[in-house]
Image 1 (tube, rainbow, N blue to C red):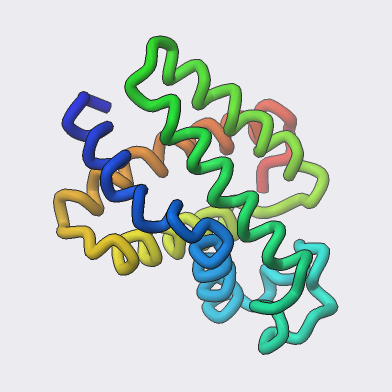
Image 2 (cartoon, one colour):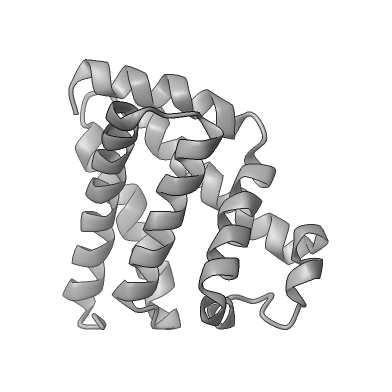
Length: 153
């Protein structure tokens, strides 16, 4: 990413990171509303959908999603940022491999992440494309880790 793209990401990121748990909850809620079968992969699968926003396990996971993105965005523009992103997201991918999450589910989540960010940050088409570039890069790291493990679906 060039320096203008990095600055755009960092500036627009200020909106969702200001309320990290709520931002993560917005992503997960939309994800489960659109793709309810994915709830089965989570520790809070036994919680009724309408009770998820107040559930501690759900809120903890929602906060973790935003924290890992925040960690990633903090390293953008630094020396070795691509290597740091690779390290961050390979670790996430490896920790999720035992859950046997399909690439289809990951891609469903990717679409939701971009939709929620676009709405929350009022992104125009160019800004949304910059975010998509970052998320595509992250997903390339995740899918490589899954493929290297032999657990691709």
